[in-house]
Image (cartoon, rainbow, N blue to C red; front, side, top):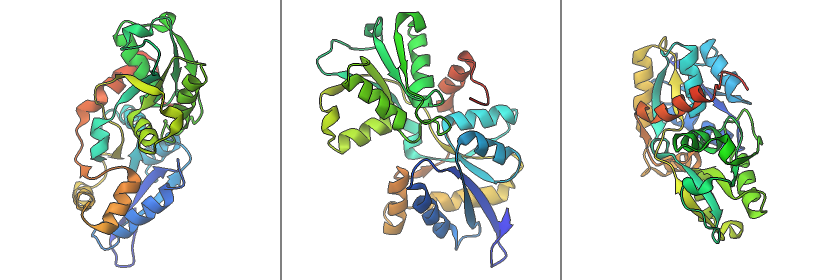
Length: 277
């Protein structure tokens, strides 16, 4: 935490540089907070594990974390870390399974004996949770053939690269089904991508939580409450706010609802996923 020219305490926010858009997003958010009582600056990290460590060591005040990074922060703080805010889209995240339109696949039970393409091993949406949902349905590793793509380890699937690799495997008949995050699939279909025109969704998960702003319990509550109040004041109806919201993939910031992390916590425990890869 530092100070700005007016003497206000400046909060330092951590974010992972998973795409070139991260810089204009955070420059826009910094500009938005400049006139508030909680001005900010931001620091970019190359991976979420380093960001989690920086938060715990006190080098940043708040981390913009994936769901996997949130679970790891909770573990390393004995459950005392606090989620401050989320995107509206983080409350309704899903994993989808997509297959070729002509294949006779419908639901999880039809996957026995099939080839399933998974994204990076640290991706909640494209690997960890798909394996959890399969296991919950009674489908184990011996019942399917897993085709794995560790394309962007450290980014927790944020780049979408491993999702796209999984989709490509289906298109090239290297797999029968691909696990993808709903955001990746929506981006492909919204763009009218001709390469996925012959694919269809054959199963979708329940909603679960994705990202949140995470702080330690040592961050002053009055300060963090003021910061959250300013964040929630961003409005879709204000053009300069909308530009930032669109880039970050939301319409409205929300207070956290943490029950949507329970499935990922169980999945990480079941799969023995620790604090490093």
